[in-house]
Length: 179
Image (cartoon, rainbow, N blue to C red; front, side):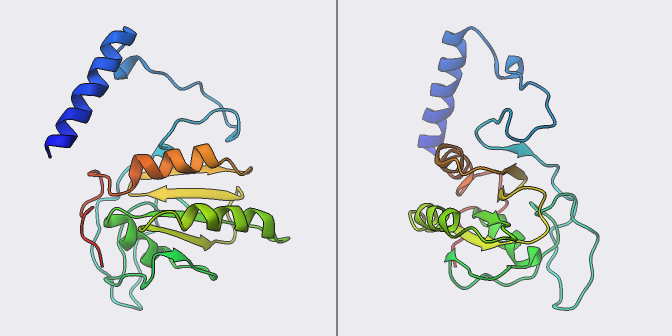
């Protein structure tokens, strides 16, 4: 907790020295996901319910795709790391609730080189999952509790920045609970 206070004070000092406040930092408006990005991705409103679902229970639609919060199954994905098939959002959301980050990719025509690069990043962390997800409108999507970043071209700096920003984030409801 003391470290969080030191980090907060340091961040405020940087903003003060830079002559701005966090409310003055603006992101240019664009519909092109490649044109501009902020470390940490786009904030997605937290869904009002994060209740546990029974295995065949239906629920309200998620407010983003891929999902970043909401109702989910009360089970963990057994292994953090690389998953070679699509992980249901109802499972992925539970991992994000506990401070995990997901890297999703959609390559209908195949993308072995991209997957190799994403695997290398995923294997550097203990609470990151890499999983394919079809029907995305971009090739890559990064998700954490309440955050989403979508883009088409591999960008290690962008991916690592997102992970650094959200892994075990105190914004997730139960960040330090680990299976």
